[in-house]
Image (cartoon, protein in one colour):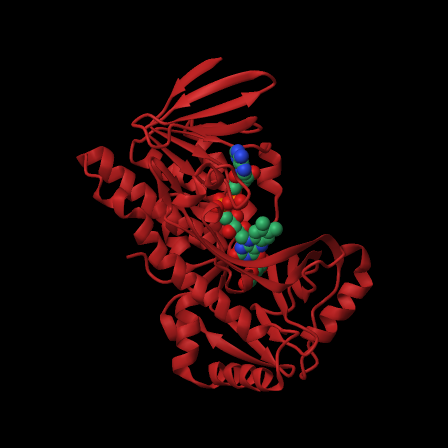
Length: 393
Ligand code: FAD
Ligand code: DHB
């Protein structure tokens, strides 16, 4: 058994845990990051791809955006599609702000590399984590591996271990209120070796189901199809996927996505989920451990960055001035933003997906709403300001 001490014990080396560890380091606060998976797994896991203006600013202010500024693709708008016709939502014209396409795994690589060059304590492949004495002054994290147990005593613990992590489930159920909604469909996502043939993302409503055209780099496209919630990937050959993408994304002007070798396929479920509060004693939840959004609004990773921005500020205030007011307000501060992102993600999902139980009235209303967003500057501005990211209060 080995004993360690740190100021903040962080469970999980995803975007939330790594960024928190880096922000704390900038404030002179020590942390240990415990990650169940190996480094390579964390750096290769393909997930989100759109960074809000707000997240880019957070990463820039923290000095970890050099490669992002060089390699990230600045997008000044998106296109919405209906009946094969596209309508552009010009973010910069409507809000003065843009978003950046840069893969989550690239952000993770940048943060890991920076933490290691700053001699950060990152423990990959750490073993089994359990949390103890969360309501005491000195909580601890136990890490068991091959019969050995390390005990890390902390002032505070940050649960940044995603939706299936150990942190949220360490809180007694009666201390949390859960808000949960699942959707009766999923996304089949592919990564393809095909240069983007369109400058911006396309969110297409189609009678056969929603489709999204996105990209990762000048050589790689990322595309998604609405599919059944229990879709069997084995039933989707590469040809079948490309045919369906051509059908749903094909435009009346003749454009359709360029095909290419499919590098990866996966199915992602759709869920809206929040627990309240984000604090139990000295444990603070951040990112997917506390909330999940359906991916349509591209908010998941961005919300994780907002949470840890607030948490780092609050911990800084606590250590610098012995003032715990921001820490006490952490949950309420985050939840105010989380619910706005939940509303937006639910709204984008409802606007664009095919709902099997939709009545003819629902379908007409959905089309009317999409046409309204396409034609009204006020409605388009509302979409744009949520998409580029609400300011951090
Ligand atoms: P995570 O990235 O989940 O990181 C949590 C970390 O904790 C992981 O590294 C995990 O291995 C580790 N961990 C878990 N349990 C333990 C434990 N017991 N002990 C130690 N470590 C542990 N968002 C979008 O905006 N667009 C998308 O296209 C998109 N696609 C997604 C596809 C998938 C399959 C998933 C699951 C999510 C997707 N998201 C997407 C959401 C986005 O990726 C997340 O919101 C984001 O990863 C949240 O970051 P996080 O750091 O909170 O959690
Ligand atoms: C991507 C994912 C999203 O959920 C989204 O809304 C836009 C783009 C992507 O993976 O590129």
